[in-house]
Amino acid sequence: MLKVVLIDDEQVVLQGMSHLLAEDFPDYEITGSFTDPEPAIRFIEENKGQVDVVVTDIKMPHISGVTLIERIRDIRPEIVMIAMSAYTDYEYIRQAMKNGAVDYLLKPCRRKEILGIFEKAEQQKKEREQETEEKQKERLFIKLLKGAENWQDRDSLIFPEGTDCVCAMWSDKDKGREEWEAALERRRAELRKKNAVGTAEEHRLWIIAPFSELQEEEFLKTCVDAGDFAIYLERRFPWTQQELRETVQALLEREFYMDFNGRLFAWDEEEWQKKSSGAEEINMEEYLPFSKIEMILIRGREDQLQLILHEGRRRLLNRTDGFDPGMLKKGMIRFCCMMEERVKTQETGKVPERLSEQEQILSDLRNSRSLLQAWTNLEAYLQQILSFFQEKAKVPSYVRLASAYMEANYMQELSLQKVAEYVSLNPWYFSSQFKKYMGIPMGEYLNQVRIKAAVNLMEERDLKIGEIAELVGFKDSAYFGSVFKKFKKMSPKEYRMKIMNK
Image (cartoon, rainbow, N blue to C red; front, side, top):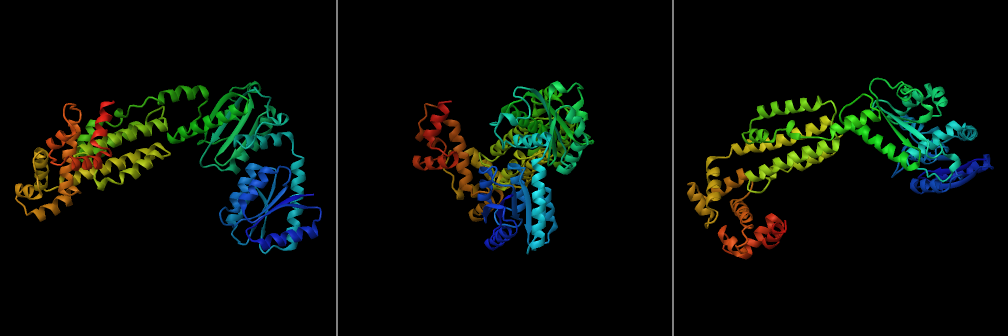
C-alpha cells in the first residue's frame, strides 16, 4: 500500500487523480492533497512515515515543481517523486528527473500511463525498503550535511560518537551532480572497505571516513578521479553533529578562499594552516601605493594609472599564498574610502553628485566572488575618480579664480554680485557657469567652505558657537546652526560635544 500526496494548483486535477486512484488502487491512501506547495512541504516535514509518493505539477505559481522536488528530496530522500506537466517542455522534465523524480506524466494524463507509473512507484518503494545499510548511511549523511536531521535516533548514526574522522571535499564548478556520482560509484568498493560514506551534490563531492581505517595517508586524495581542475580539501575532527557542521562550514569557507584566489590544487589540513596564515597579513600599500596613485589621479594621468594598476594586478595574481577574501576586500574598500576623503578635501567636504555611481561599485566590490572581479571593481572605482579630476581640470580659469577667492575671503560678506565683479563677469552668467562646472550653486559652495572652517575652529574651546559663526562669515547664529546641521548631520553644539568626548 502506498501513501500518496498530490500537489497541483488546479483543484480539478487533484479531484480527477484522487478519483482514479480510488478506483484502480483502493489500497492506496491519499494522505494529503494541496493546491499550494508550501503547506505540502510543511506536511511532508511534519508527518514522517505518512508519505511514500508525491505527485506534483511542474508549472505552478510561487514555486516551481522542479524546485519543489529538490526540496522534498532534501527533506525526505526516501520519497518517490512523480512530475506532471501540461507542457511538452523537456527541459523542465529533464530538470525534474535530475532533481529526483522517477518519472513524469504529460497532461492530460492517460489512465494507462498513470497506472503504469504508480506500479513503477510501488516497485521503487520496495527497492528503497530493501536498501543496504551503506545506502541508508549515505542518505543520512546527506541530511546531516544539510542540517536537516537531528541525532535523536542513536542507532542510525553513521559512526559511534567521538570517532576520529576525516571529512574530504572535492569541488569543481564545471562538474555537476551526475559526474560526481559517477566518480563516487567507480570507487565504491574501495570506500566500502574503509567504512567511508560519500555523497554528491551539484559541483561538490563529500566523503567521510574513520581515521583509524585510513592506513594509506593519501587514500582520500587519490580514491576519486577528480580531474585536473578540482579543489580538494580535508579536515580531521571528532564525530559529533556539531563538529560535523563546523567542519562542513570550515571546508566551504576554504573552498571560497581557493575559488576566490583561482587555486586549483589540493590542500590538506597542514598545508591549509601553513598557507592561510600567510594570507592573513595584507598590506595594500605593496600593491596600491596610495600617495603615488593620489598624485596620478589629481593630475588626471590615465596612462600612468593604467601602468601602476597593471603592475599591482600582476603582483596580486602572482602571490603564492593567495588572499583571505574578506581581508582583501576590506583593504580595497579602505583604500577607496581614503581616495573619497581626498576628493572631499578637493571639494571642501562634499563628494560631487557626478560620483554617485561609486556606491554601486563599492557594493559590487563587497560581493565579488573572485580576486579578478574584486580588482576589476577597484579599477572601475579609480577610473571614476580619475574622470572626476580630468573633468575638474577642464574648469574655466574664472571659475577656479572665483573658488580661490571665496576660500581666501569666506569670513567677509560675499554676495554673488561681489564675486562676479571680482572675475569681471555678469552675475547671471557667472552663476549659471559656476553651477555648470562645480555641480552646485555658488552660495552652497561658499557655505561648504565656511562650515569646513567652522569645524576646524570647534576645537578652540575658548570660542563660543556664536563667535565661531561670526568668524567664518555668518551674521546670523541660527542660520549658521541650520547650515552646519545640513552638512554635518548634527548641531554645532552636538558636534563640539562629540569631539570633546573623544
